[in-house]
Amino acid sequence: GENVEQHPSTLSVQEGDSAVIKCTYSDSASNYFPWYKQELGKGPQLIIDIRSNVGEKKDQRIAVTLNKTAKHFSLHITETQPEDSAVYFCAAISGGSYIPTFGRGTSLIVHP
Amino acid sequence: EAGVAQSPRYKIIEKRQSVAFWCNPISGHATLYWYQQILGQGPKLLIQFQNNGVVDDSQLPKDRFSAERLKGVDSTLKIQPAKLEDSAVYLCASSPGPIQETQYFGPGTRLLVL
Image: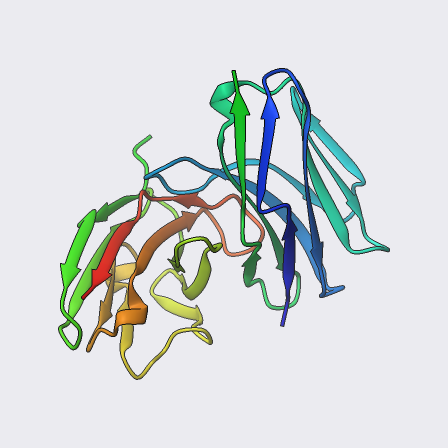
């Protein structure tokens, strides 16, 4: 089955800095890669996603890049703000099984 | 638009007891998912429904876990008997269709098994 590795597990930055979270996947059939933000006591919320026919996607301060050859994708957050503090999860969904596999999460802390 | 509703929000039981969780997806969403999220880990899919049929339940521990989605709307997830390792947050999510579409998560039910 699919295996998704996510790094780092914890990321601490100063407000205004950039943050980068990286994920690798194992199943070459995976073709949809969403990123979720989970705040304390809440369910995950989709913040951005990318499909395998696209190399990069941007939405304001958030961007995601995908390298299909290397089987890795990354989340980039620029100009971080304290409200960006949360746990971020990457996921990979195979076009064959349609089962979503999540990474273990990255706890992002943005210091004011 | 109302989000995914789950109840209860918290539950504490002793091992070997049974427990049930309820989920009401977003109106009109055909696909419903149940996830188990152990502290410090990402959500793990337990079962996926398309309307009232099971799409995948390969990761559901069927000796103790069961789930149903009556009439293709609400769903219940049951654990009987519970074990200590079942302590986790149980998340319900729904999406309009079955494949690669945005999943909308509920707030989850936090289960503690003593």
